[in-house]
Length: 217
Image (cartoon, rainbow, N blue to C red; front, side):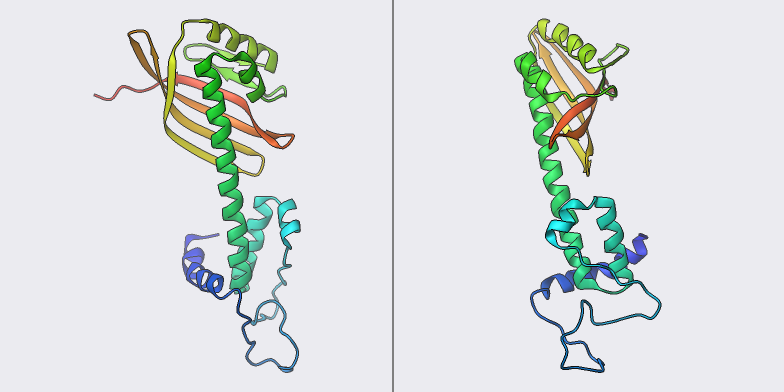
């Protein structure tokens, strides 16, 4: 959808959102005694946008809902567009919160040197990979966990994260952040990218890439 289309439609979507609970008359209908169908305006040659129930919407992907939202805007069915927008917004918010929680659990396991918790947060599959700072790519769940066993057996360190940014869509998500680590009198910063995947109803880590943070003078 173009920005121009969104800019034109969003005020009307917002207005429809506030009027959602109030039935709107369909002016110019040939049979006013009949209840109007979804939307008051009908355009010749356009395809009717099916209204997904809450249970049906839960089964649709965000991409499918986005297509339905764009179609509703094109047909000027702003009440349905407002509803679909709210579904997408709530889904994105829920997914981001769940991914943020999974990311926090990963760093909690790192900080507490808890191999069992670390094992639980990592997912399964041949695509599971990890790149530690100044190291090569380690592929496969078992190999990745073996590498973490060595890391967690090393010198105790405190680790916190800053500048956390999350993107989540359907069953995939990624987090970028800055890791601030302290071990004894040493302090370091790394940039990390963590890729999450939804497996068996929960968000798990399938890729971690840590590298040195740039030094700004």
